[in-house]
Amino acid sequence: MIGGIKAYGSDTGTHIRYQSSEDTLIKPLDPLLPDPAKPVTPIDPTDPSGPVAGTGGSLSLDFASGFQFGNQAISTRNETYYAKAQEYSDFDGVKKVGPNYVQVTDIRGTGSGWHLAVKQATQFQTAEGQLLTGAEISFSQGEMVSNLANDFAPTPVSSYTLPLNSEIDVVVANQNKGLGTWLYRFGSDEKTGAQAISLHVPGKTVKYAKKYQTALTWTLKDVP
Image 1: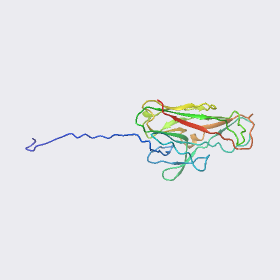
Image 2: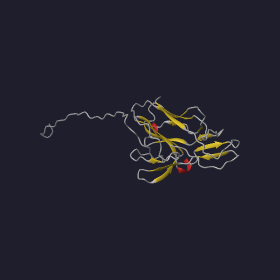
Image 3: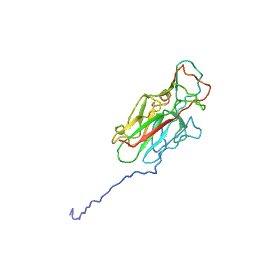
Image 4: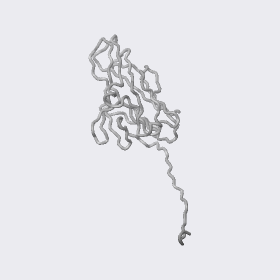
């Protein structure tokens, strides 16, 4: 009794429980300042219909930039060309340009980790099968960015040259890393992004006045 007034007290349990969802589809985020509440609309320079949709699910590959090395004059010298930076419309519809990137989301809630791999199965070639012999794609300035603390960041490979027909791991999220949404971007802004992905073509390679293309396969692996 306090001051002649009886006081009563009791404890009530209060909790919240999170669970993963296989129906989730995370949209691409801004590579300059990723905010899950403000998704963006990327432009695919290789496909006017837009980028390929993300895989969806609680562990998902949400987006991967397409790379356009532009129209180039035929040359007999060794040449290096750079992929155009990523164009997109931000949440408010404003046109922007930023680094090319690959986006991964892990909302399984297990902290079990994952790997991101990439593979170039074939050489650049024309529709008639003429090869751009010796051409190599190289990546640099690879880094992870998110709205989460860097303590949870996966480990990226910052620079590498793609081998032909050989898959390589380029991002590793060990246990309790890579939770939430992470962007593996090449460069930190429009300027650095425009110099981060290169295509080297030997001068001795025969070139035809045609379009050469290849495909990169990004694979998200559910492994620690």
